[in-house]
Figure 1 (tube, rainbow, N blue to C red):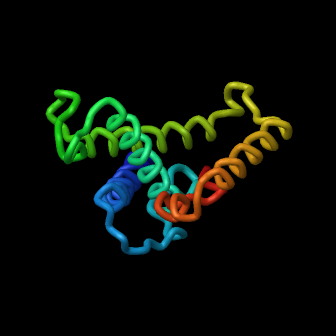
Figure 2: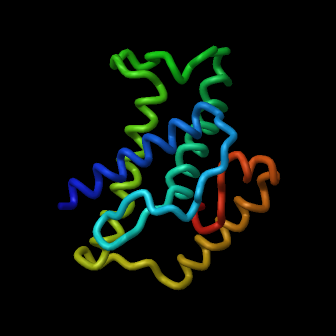
Figure 3: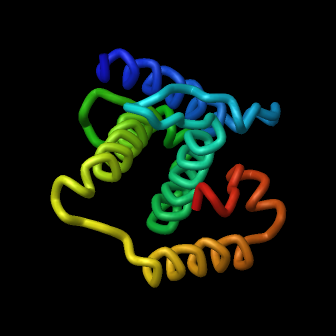
Length: 146
């Protein structure tokens, strides 16, 4: 059952990443539930933010060393997959890992303290403050996603 739910998540995130990485300007329903993993609902807004943030990070990193036209459609790793497909796979893995780790914190005696939650909140707010309105809009960022 969990695999079916994750498959739905994978399809939704791939769709969101495709929209994000191709620069389509259409608005998305950020609150739409793209999938559930366990008892957690995963929003299209979160999936889109992760895709956008990853794309921006990769754009900045890769173009520092050399100009790369159409890098998203090229096989830069030699794996037979495009850069875009490799990043999508990474996003899918990260979302699954994050949610599964959170689900099993108690199993391993792990907890996030109030002080740590406060630090996370402060860092998320700093991220929002440090980025321009245009960057926030482009990434689809919300404090809760960060």
